[in-house]
Image (cartoon, rainbow, N blue to C red; front, side, top):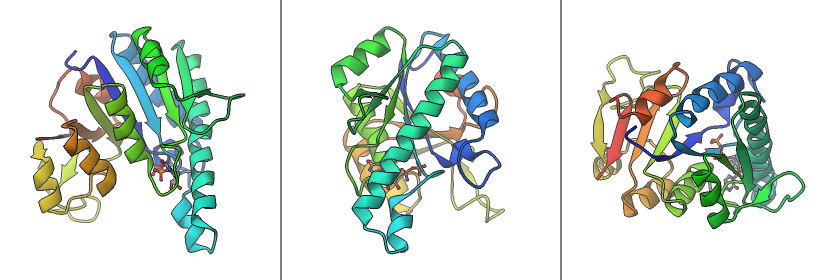
Length: 235
Ligand code: UDP
């Protein structure tokens, strides 16, 4: 395995599968299976999950809701997704812990860095819920922050496209894929990989990001074992 400790970022929307809202149990089970494959290879896995399938603070604000209030709802949505993923993983026999950035002690451990690292060393999958715990941030920022804190080797951004393209491949048939690209070129070319706050935090800490198609069976294991799929962003 090329990577020993990974931070997997999954968007909330990915959990919707073919639905318009919420969680698709089939998709959830598929993800759990994919994650199990890398855990059984001895890889230490931490996961940050989004909440966009349930609620986004910006969406609330555009309908007149207070932004901070909306972001609190978004953060709670990530805890709901975290619980769902935890349950799916445990159905697969994978040991997990859910740590939340906002205190919700009856359902999740609080985020404690040293404890998270200890869980990883014991080969438990650690799911980080609640984002960064602060409004005006995204779970991409939470993913980079947690990856740095736990000293992950790489951030794996699992999406429904198989990498970073010159333009949106779902809209432009002439779009071509990068196998590898530098942080600087992503910024220069104005490509969207993560939001700017998350992306620059990763750049400053020299933490590579791999964008890959999480919906293709076996892909997560391939990426972790060093196969060149997706797009790798590094210095
Ligand atoms: N959120 C937040 N602070 C954070 C992370 C998330 O306030 O540190 C809120 C924010 O409202 C966001 C929502 O939680 O819209 C869901 O997260 P995100 O949009 O990143 O989810 P994804 O797009 O990955 O599904």
